[in-house]
Amino acid sequence: MDGPRFKIPESVLVVIHTPALEVLLIRRTGDDELWQSVTGSKDFDDEPLARTAAREVEEETGIPCGEGSPLAPRLLDWQRRNVYPILPRWRARYAPGVRANTEHLFSLCLPAPLAPRLDPCEHTAWRWLPYREAAAATFSSTNAAAILLLPQFA
Image (tube, rainbow, N blue to C red; front, side):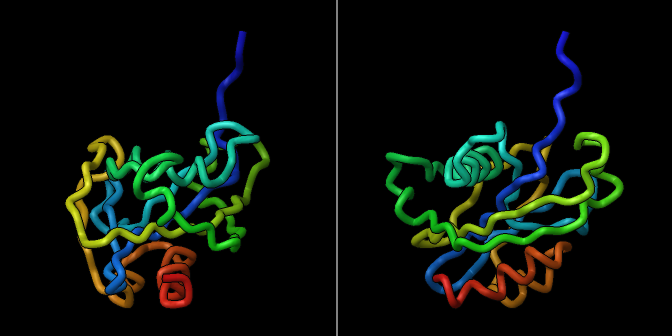
């Protein structure tokens, strides 16, 4: 019999933007103040980070950017990571004793803003904002910092 499946404490953050540095933010279900970029954990330990990033973008926005798709070359691994404490309200998703997550930063440049297809179980709204406004609107300090780095990577 298998035990509970815990989240892997290694994730991606994908800042979706346009060449004009407009940033897509999505609002988490259950809290009108939790605006963020695409985020998500690896499904298995040896899942390549680029695959995790592409999978999460498609799951959360409906935008295909995985290997072989026209947008695949626009998914950029920044080769940067953040390590942060897991908020108490989300710790039960992880194995006992896990208190920190390692987040790998990516971006996806779209030619122009588009309307994403959200999974209503995860997100309830979306909006495009100039990057400084998007950084101010996100609830996560690591997400805000990544958005503010966007001009260096765009």
